Length: 367
Picture 1 (cartoon, one colour):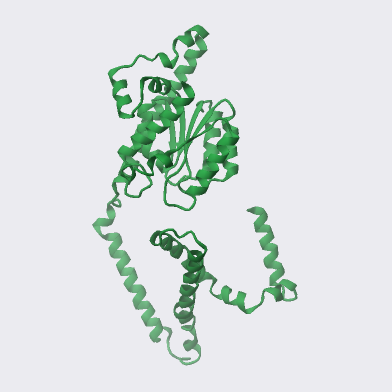
Picture 2 (cartoon, helix red, strand yellow):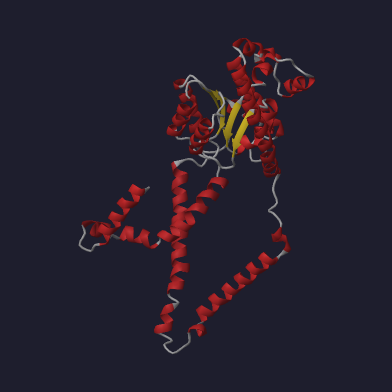
């Protein structure tokens, strides 16, 4: 960004000089047209793109993109002619037609003041209304995500404390004692059997994963399913945040690694909010190293970047032997009843299925 800023500064300086070749080359009717309307284009492009993508299904085509640009340019032209130019001309009557007339006696100024006053009164009423003192109503998904945050924090504290105790015990135990506590020899309680039934696991799968330490990182999908994952694997430390992108994951994993709490099993649920950069994925795998197993859940959503992300993950799994793809996309594609209203986040039933799929994938590597 610093280098780009320096280059653009030099470009502006050179272009601004009237004797510059760039000054003459860029001074043409087409660029001047766009330049005069550039602020309107800037204002309208984001809402047009967002609403168009929401309203029009399967919009990732060249024709659709051309149509979006055309709508933006039409709105910018209308705004330039009938909003910007109208206000630009307000000053002209003050000097030419009404040299002695007071500013506030001009009709256009009076109309502008009336509209501004109405907006101010409406805003003041909205702020002072009792209803604005309450939090914005949330849907079931938002409520569930908010409730999950506190549950995840409590489970994380227990998982970290357990991990530290386990490391201390292992440091004091002999190799014979360690082999005697192999997870496959887990004695199953009634609660364990209930978990096996809930998550559709057999005894070998459950014993292979229940005591496994896990570091889980992800976006709102992980935030949604984390309590189910921690219920099934209590030694799971989860770091999930709404809207998270793949570029944030390497720093999180590196921080855990520096604290010596990065588990040998890393579960990642990321890619719902944007395209995964291959460099970020490579950085994640380098941090994990060859001694850890990475379980990356692929995505399922009607978003343009989901298919490229899933293709990237499948290709990278061929490169890294310790990268395992948890194929949620294939499992859920015929089970829309497992998803919330947004058809992205799992509902409670889907969360159990999501956690079960992760557990089965981990079990397959640990049995």
